[in-house]
Image (cartoon, rainbow, N blue to C red):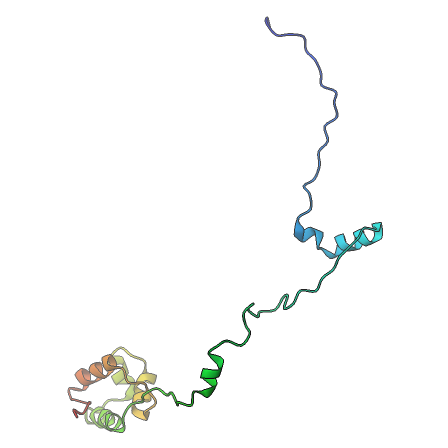
Length: 142
């Protein structure tokens, strides 16, 4: 222990403090009530659209009038009646059910039902699968 000076003790008090409250903690109901009780000055403000799911710029846009004036009827193209009839006839000629045909082309039976009822939106890839599976041309050339 040679070379070490006299041992001294530090008797100054050490103060351990908590972190200062965050902004969210200051706005907490308990903190506000405690401040009121102690007589501190409190300022409360109601924010417009606070806590709602409305965007800040949700006011009327410039395109609103143009969208309102738009009278064009937009609808998806549906399967033609010729395709429906050709598909149904070809499937019946092969003596297949809708489920069997669907399994053969790796699609759901609902897809075949939609094509035969005319509710499906034409997909050339599916129509091509149907033509190969049934061995006939379903689309009419115009």
